[in-house]
Length: 481
Image 1 (spheres, rainbow, N blue to C red):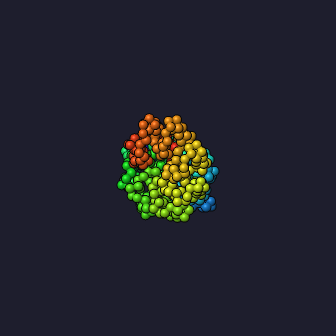
Image 2: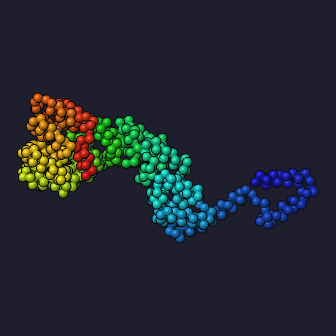
Image 3: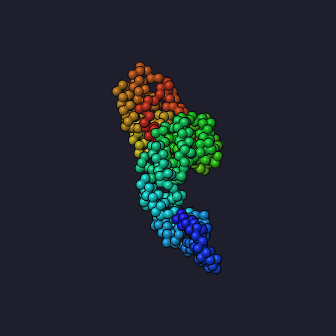
């Protein structure tokens, strides 16, 4: 263009400086008007011609896409390739990944991405960070916008951010497969604020990585409209923020329950079934999943079953739920096996009902373990069955690690006590009791203390070594049921 202007300027100077050369040129100009095809091209003429060519090319490509069943209407504002061959290459490349014509119609803007400049670099990077090649097509279908992204400017910073949250390198691909939209988030926006807020209420920073791996969706939740309202509501029920922090560390998916449509109606449902308001915090802390269940149907079914098969009235059923809310999801066949075992030992049905209300964990125990504990109770300890009715928690303790060794210590000391006295205490407290010259009056067992450890009679605190007790093992097993 510059050389053309330069030559034109030079020709003008030559003609104006030499009249002899000017006359023939003027005659050429006057005659050339009769032959428009010989007129000197202008910049505008070149642009118009290029636009016409592009329009023709677009029509041809649109016709080609229609023959494949692709509706090209959304591609009007998208720059398309200059030839059908290039578009065919894009379509075939995507189809080899597993992208169907229906997928292309759902998001036709994929066809605006160059195979070499967009698709190959992006897909290569995704494979590099842990997404299997066989899953790349599925990833693109779930999040086709990724094909428009810049690896350096958009994708790599998000991956670096996730690594900074202590998400294991081998889990990055898994996290992005679960929630590919993370690749489109701004680092200084929702992701950063949600993490900062959770840390502010007591969530340990080192647990953020496992939380992201378990439920990455919380990174896309707005603090003001989603996370904080849930926290505030649960705090209003009596759950301290420290307890909530521990709860979120283990089950962050609770944040995915809708506050108005799920959490609040389920809390109201618990109250309607007789759960006391002062017990709501304990119920939720023990079994956070209860906030997201179809609770009314489950409670109705279990309440009817407990009344029909176990002869436990609605008030007793409410006490059962308070002590072990996992029962709402426990299979009724599982519940009946321990009950049938107890009935088979000659314990009256009314007493079995009392035992279940007092210690609902009974219905989640394995019958084989109950048999071993029962036969030791009868043959070695020689005790009356009524003691089991008074202290059904006996079955929840490990026979080998607690019942046998403590009973043998009692025997060596010549001490006879109730089951509650020698089982329901820490190892340290048990030794103190053995060293004492008297047997203290029996009091109630451990009580639930929000945000703290179990408080034993006499205000003794269970030691850290006692945290991994048989009861904890039972709790974890019942939660998984």
